[in-house]
Length: 455
Ligand code: NAI
Image 1 (cartoon, rainbow, N blue to C red):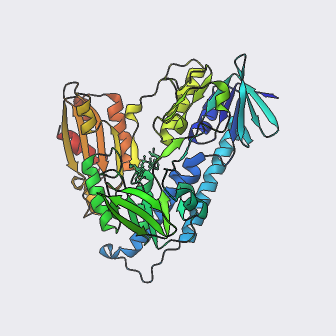
Image 2 (spheres, protein in one colour):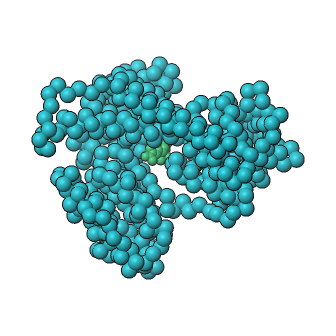
Image 3 (cartoon, rainbow, N blue to C red):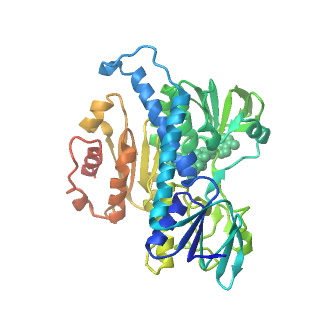
């Protein structure tokens, strides 16, 4: 029996940062992970996709560099090399997380943790032969790909014809064609990668638009650009069945079969709340995940749930912040998370980044807003690098309270610019102050300044 102040179940971004912060604040912490440290983000999500998308960009530059005076013959893309490079990047980062845990004094247990129960305010967790005990427990078990009840989907997953984000990132040979079920963030990033390296990609989306709640004008630009990149979109289209050679779909009562070599299941993710003894604690679980309060604490005192498993906002950076808030609550530091200022990014070409209210959500909340839009081409740097790009920066300004409530961008570099916009929304600074911020020239970020001047 080993005693700790805190046990963290799950070593993804939420779990490992929670363990790190807790140890820094003097809590003797155990971190349990059955697969690799870093979770979905590091091993089969954020980081591997960025590595592959970077390789695809290099390929694209080699193919289409003539305008910049770069020409090359026999340009080929080697998926195996790109995947091996991605694996090296992932390994380096996973080792880095392990080294940080060691340096901070976190005790890492490799294995599957099972909650045994809670008695006299102490939680017991079994991992391998060991039983760990602590008065505090953080559940950070993440999420898994949703598997919709489509005929043939289980058989497809078993045969390898259908893949989730996990398997597709390990594909060492490119399929000739790919059908993505779901045009959300995962579907689009994967579609963008595979289309860029020459795969015939079809995206099937049951809603009338791609990219979820993304600003509709941005969605229009995405659709236009993706189509130019060779992707096909079937919107308002339902999937009826997956056969051994394709996907049967239906739209407006008309059926068709999309023949393809592989299928990606990117129809959403669901919180992991079962199979590790959570029920022994009496923790409340409702769709979309473990129920938590503003401190990330569940209905059981001392038991917290952070990251995808609470289903609030399935993003690695949300999990980071939730980890900090939960640890602060444990040690009596006042803190709370503001979900309204968490930025989101789609890392396709072009990139999409947004924070805060959209035009629609602001109107639904009864806010009086002024919407301004600056084309990215107003930035000299952007134009120098993307002469044909039609990106923009849109600001949603609350005219009554005189503050910026939302920023939505599409175009190169916006993933790197959005944190500045998030600071503006978070700080609630009046426009007179925002106008005084000096942006370095020439940068693409200057487009935010241009948009501010339009308010
Ligand atoms: P998602 O919820 O973003 O998109 C799923 C899409 O699939 C929706 O548009 C939905 O209408 C559609 N869909 C569902 N069932 C369908 C069916 N049977 N036929 C056709 N379409 C169907 O989920 P996704 O893309 O799987 O991503 C999961 C989570 O991972 C999200 O919360 C996302 O935020 C996160 N993520 C974030 C990334 C980022 O920040 N860049 C990258 C990848 C994932």
